[in-house]
Picture 1 (cartoon, rainbow, N blue to C red):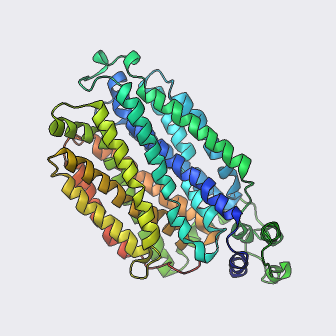
Picture 2: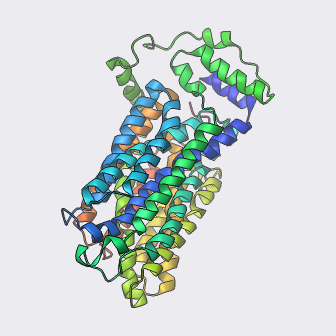
Picture 3: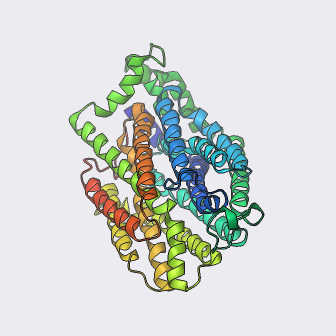
Amino acid sequence: MSLINAAIDEIGMTPFQWKLFFFNGFGYAVDSLLIVCQSISQPAVDLEFGRPVKQIAGVALASQVGLLAGAAIWGFTADIIGRKLAFNTSLFICAAFVLIAGSMPDYYSFSTMVAIYSAGAGGNYILDATNLLEFLPVKNAWLVTFMSIWWAVGYTVTGLFAWAFMSNFSCPSTATGPADCLKSENWGWRYLHFTSGSLVLVLSLARVLFVRMKQTPRWLIAQNRDSDAFQVLQDLAIQYQRPFSLRLEDLEVQGRVLHTEMSKWSSLRLWKHVGGLFETKILAWSTIVIIANWFVIGMVSPLYSTFLPYYLASRGADVYGTPSNYTTWRNYAINQLAGLGGPIIAGVLVEMKFFGRRGTLAMGALLTMVLQFGYTQIRTPAQNVGVSAAITAASNIYYGTIYAYTPEILPSAHRATGYGLCVVLNRVGGISGVLIGSYANVQTTAPLFVCASLFGLLVVLSLLLPFETRGKRSV
């Protein structure tokens, strides 16, 4: 692995890695776009069809279950079959079922489609971050953090779509249920899905047509495919006329990786991918703490993002006098635009000696906690827009860093398995968050108090992480 890393550093940053930054970024954008797509749609779907189980936000729950399944499938198989298949197929799965979701005639069928397209997207950023990191020279590792700008782009695009469609093609804000919310006047969430699905289809075609994805050299090494890893790097060096001094015999003389001669799906090989995350005490501690971070994020996200539309609508009634679809979704779009600043700030802070990865995580969580506590006290329109936008930007500092830091501290041979385990526990936390929020009054400040407290816990968990990866090569 050290020889492979040195060869990548020698070749340096090429147009291929820059293409990966953009086209892997599409996976990040689609993941966030679809999570927000269903959360934006849920209030309108609830009004038109009515909730089968009044207390449970069924659409949000379906999304979290689908995301969990996707994370498990893509994450736990990628260390066995490689990273290429998910890169080429996941966005097509998403596009097809997002388009179908927009035409669903009832609550159950729509929730089913949400679960399926969420499963397609569920492991996207696991593989996208892993793909990019495993091709990057060490001096360009900050790009994995900055790639989370695409996550914010996904939120922003969906927020703008919502402003256009939900403002103009939704039931009146005075509607209370199916009796006064007819399909003919509630096409906004359908247009949102048709437009988002079409966009995802274009992105999926672009990924296949403009990037000839290769298995990463680090994964190939872990599979004893030394000659294939050598060929990938040699082709890259020749194509872009870069120096390349690695020899195939340098790799082969190191010996063989144990157990690779067995079936890919043997129980021993599967267990080694999990056991490799706990090989030493400090690695085990690192794995446990990063999983704890992801679990807590999972609880926070639906409590804040999924139920924010309800909360903004209720604050609109208080702050503006008469609730307005236009005002609600304009504010939502402004929030997501402000969120673009978070990954940019994170990309700068992670390379600063005083902050690094762990300090940036703690800073993002701390700022979010303070702002969410402050949000409970808003009284004017300006406060409403300003504080909610600041929360989105601050939380994206944390999210942008955790997406990059997680693959950096996981060993290459087990990276997708470890990231998959983190995201699976994240989705378990998400399901817990949906259920907690379902039985809470989402039009009060209670969910925000819970979210702020959980971000306070994330400050502590961030500082407990044992590895600082700034300036260091991932292994």
